[in-house]
Image (cartoon, rainbow, N blue to C red):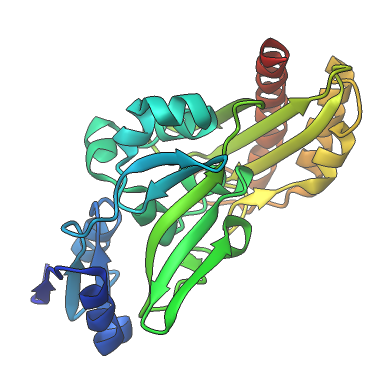
Length: 287
């Protein structure tokens, strides 16, 4: 560690004022599960750390067909909340895969999204769920679709003087879902992960399909071509396999110190098939 100024603002406006004053020299502290390791490794050297834990930015509510979440909502709350389980079960399944109990108890939804690790489960889930992210700045508020929020490796559209404040997600009670991942150890970031959502019509054909991957690019990757394979079709085993193969073919992951690009590509196809199979089974139960 090294010396820095610690500030604990009493309001969102005060936090925004500090961020506006210090710009890129300031870092926001929420759950600390991303920031503290970065500080320890001296990958970032902010002059000011802005602790927002005292701000009223947590909580879970449902209204107008949408699940509304404060940015300081902890991963453990997403995992344990009855409101989340009833209205957005894919989010609960994704949150349960994050780290370990300590990480989920401290870590926040907003912190994970702002950190934007491309192998993290929650950014992937937000893209798959068509979430909208609320952002506050000194010049006012704006809303960004999750698919537009993540712009590259550890980068987002969030400006240095802005704060992610809230997230809202369409209720998905009528969709089957599944989140699959492979990691080196339980609780590690995923080598590859996939979130699949399926809605069936009265005939049992696919009315809507969504498939988003983590760990295969610099940001979460949604694959419309694979979704198109399923839309309007009966979700047979062959059709699900075709969709999984289409997704695999559309991905161009890079190799790293752990696995090769070819391994990631192969794994993405396997996990996509598993996720789609489970999502369809749940959609059939709902229908």
